[in-house]
Length: 244
Length: 107
Image (cartoon, rainbow over all chains, first blue to last red; front, side, top):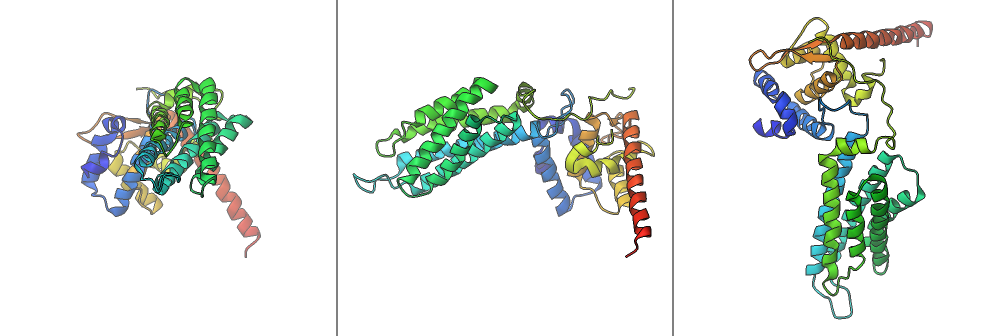
């Protein structure tokens, strides 16, 4: 039971843990209750109900936090893919390294970072062709990465150049953190599976992890920075608390 | 106002049950759960209960009272009562419309 309650974020537990435990002592949870608690913990992480924040606009904080999770996982996979490319054996001196699995991991990474980019762009409610083009390039690049040579190379450069464009535009619209993604993508252009430059992909993965973590941990602050760009209809102002 | 619960997404229905449960006086979590189960006929899981409680509290529709040992009662605020009344009136209108149409066009 303790492990289930610990799935909730610390701020939530500080406020509700004691009474939730009291409730669970009175009514020991069955399997469905346990699943409900897990679902509740995920919700609490995606939609933190912090009392010092203004009411959460539907679809902003949670969406940004979710995009952050996706970006972080994508970044970790980019890093793993680069290590895979680096360590993969040569088939022969003329051919590419035997790095099929690494391309698969890279394709998953590109798909996830493309998805994160799409989610961020939707939150920005930005209709610019350049932004959507960059997200499309990252996502379509993921498909190319699992196809045979030379399409895989086209897919790779599509994903990386799309990320570079996204990082540059994101920097101008949202702040310097997105510059990391752009710089990471710029370095990734030097990627080569044959001479050890595969490790140049690591900054790209690291940048997505940093940006993703920032979005997860500071989502409300970032959301406020998006204010005016995020399409949110606030249906009711923060209500006054009843007399204490 | 009528959309105040609608913005809670999947927590809108549990939130309505909680407001109804608190409309006859303060209750703590376990008492709300058992009351909701008695009224609605279906159980409400602990994760759903606290997800809805947190949202209602944050929006000022309910407020927490001083803890009684480990249990903390909640009570309806004026805003919560107004919201509940608006929701129930809306539901009442919906029910009347539906029943009226059924009476006019029995299948």
